[in-house]
Length: 182
Image 1: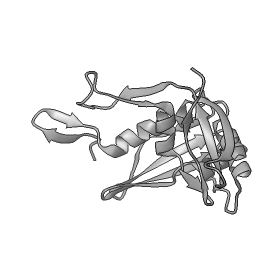
Image 2: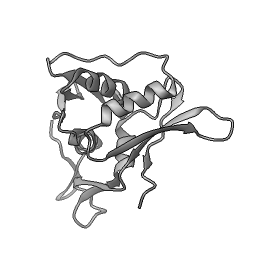
Image 3: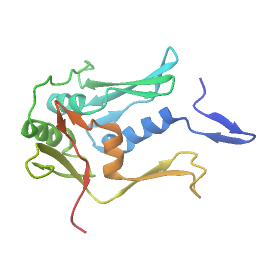
């Protein structure tokens, strides 16, 4: 199956699953201990293998990455694999905010975009939320984006991590943030 979709005569656009694989590759895949593999066709859908060196980091990423994403009638399954080539299972619920923050630290430490993780109440009297904090940088890659002069996908790092990671876990909100430092 071609990774390009003909949009109009002579114009080709990257399908959303190619963009998603690139978002994984250029965000979590920038950690030297994480390798985001290619899209593997599987019966009209796709699998993206994510190989992680270090069992604790692999378990943390398996818990925090979205494991299944739908694009219309095309599904993507993200499979985390450890250094021994074994599929890694996520940590089951229940998990509290501080345990989730520990998983964020384990999963993202070593990633050049990641700065910190903070646990704080989302609002007065509300529940604790987990805030992974990222450097105020842009992730950019070629993507056949005809709305961009250079045909690039361009987004703030925190937004790309939000796209590929869970927004809540065990009823705890995970809110991706850019550093408050300028």
